[in-house]
Image (cartoon, rainbow, N blue to C red; front, side, top):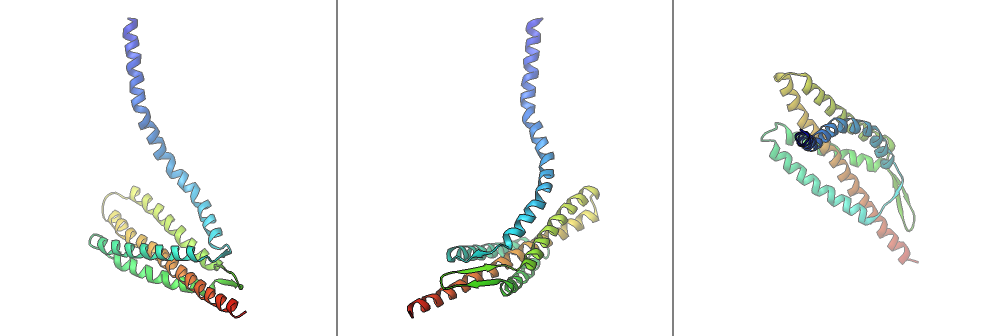
Length: 207
């Protein structure tokens, strides 16, 4: 009788070992959304603080960000054009968002506080514009959470199809808006720094 019980205990232990990863994965899936919701406010505050900090303009940083954003913008619009075959309005929404972001980037450059000296250039982005962009991203995240909740609430039908159809182009527009803003902003920082460096060389050469 004892050996039979031992084999049964071993069998139960083996089953528990096999089930343990699935239990851990299920708990992770339940806890992960809660952690993300708790992290969002801290990440938004950190994003605002970083975006409004005074910083020196460095040529390699500005050039790397500018060309990286340019590549990202091209790939984003290309993927939007391909996606428009399945998602109506994907490319048009993305193009409008990119144009609006470039316009906001130009406004951001005009509102940025620039501090020049003979050897360096510092800049401080406008707080209100950074706050506006931060709110746009936050509202988009909130809309995404609301959309998920609605998808659970609505039964399959017209309402769910409307939410699924409306969310994708809007999400792409917001992403294109941010890409356009940073593309124009870093292009302006890079060009302004190059102009400042030319003036500095002329200034020191004249001495």
